[in-house]
Amino acid sequence: MGATGENAQLSYCEQNAATPKVVPENPVFTVIPFDLEAGDTLKSTLKTTESTVPKPDGGVGDPSVTGLDVAGGVPIPLSPLFSGEDDTLLRSGIYAGAWSQIHSAAKKLDLSGATYDEVSGNLDLSGMATTPDNIKNKQKVKISGTATTDGIYTLTGTDGGSSFVLSPKPAAAEAIAAGTICGEMIRNGQTETPVVFQAHQDDIDLRDYYIGCKPNSVDYSFEIESEIKYTYNIQGMGGELKPNDEQYPGETLVTPTQYKVFTTADDTGTISINGVGQVAGCLVQSVSWSMTRELTERKGVFVLGACGLDPGKAGLSGTISVGFTDSQFYEWLRESTPFSLDLSIPGTEDVGYSFCIPRCLLTDNDAPRKTGSIIQTASFTGSYDDDYKCRFQIDRFDER
Image 1 (cartoon, one colour):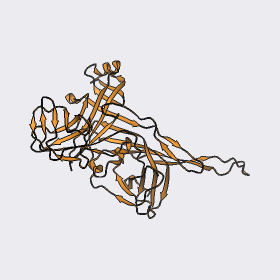
Image 2 (cartoon, one colour):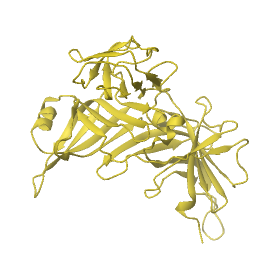
Image 3 (cartoon, one colour):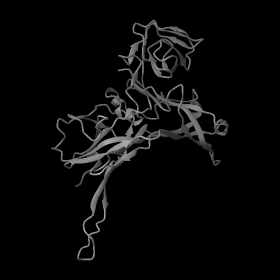
Image 4 (cartoon, one colour):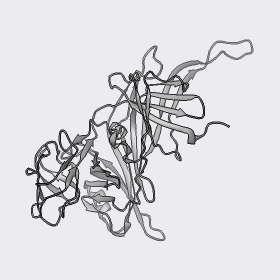
């Protein structure tokens, strides 16, 4: 009997950005809970050129190997398991730097001593025993364990400050005597984080390595009655095959024990358009988008594969399907009115996420008239937002 997908395992290891064709010393590979039903499409393809040398039978000689292409995608259900490990693929996928914590030395703080004013919407953090020193304007935080101020909020204020306006605004003032605040954030940028993928087939003697991989695009999908997924689409610089007993020196494998996956059936999740929660009538049917970087390969003489992968123009485009209740989308399309899109999952195991596209512009809207509820599907692009200083932001709430 041949190999089966059930015995396949995908893992990755972060590489040094300065030497992306080199697997690091003592590499630590972290197992990815990839979507086995969809399957990955990672592939190393040899380029060949037909021989021009004639042979006695009227044909030509053996083809010559002239190049190597490494590319493909890995579909990954969103899970809190990577939070103890840095969520490297989420970070690498949008060319972001390190996760920015609310405090230079902590991602979670005791909120006791803070005060909230319901008139101004202002949260004053200066009375805390340890005051956050690294909150960024428009960062999101999760507040838990208070009397009336629990929730996920966008903070508006000065970077590194101790006083911020909350959005949405809680209805009641509170002198906070107990509770916590947590938050980490990344924004799309220019930081390159190459990784090496390992495909390990346990039922045959094979390890397949895809080296120097960078994301050409990452696709995000929120569909009804589905797992929340993102697909990491890469180009790579090289590849190598090894038998199971010939690993890289010092190579180790980390297998996370927690595989709980977020789904769109989690009724604690929220979708907001322009800061307004979309809850009435289950109007939102699906949301998906793709973050792209248009990688360009650099080739060289006496080099198999790529010498380098240079990121090109950053772009974001997507679609949203919503019940047809008014003319709002058509008006935004006609007038080129920007709007924001937020999807937040507080999490059921002390880890949650929020995905924000702060400046969306519609490029098309279609509401076909047919039997039953009319669903309009709008296409949009994500533009750079000057307040958020990005076109895409991911916030993480790790309360562990």
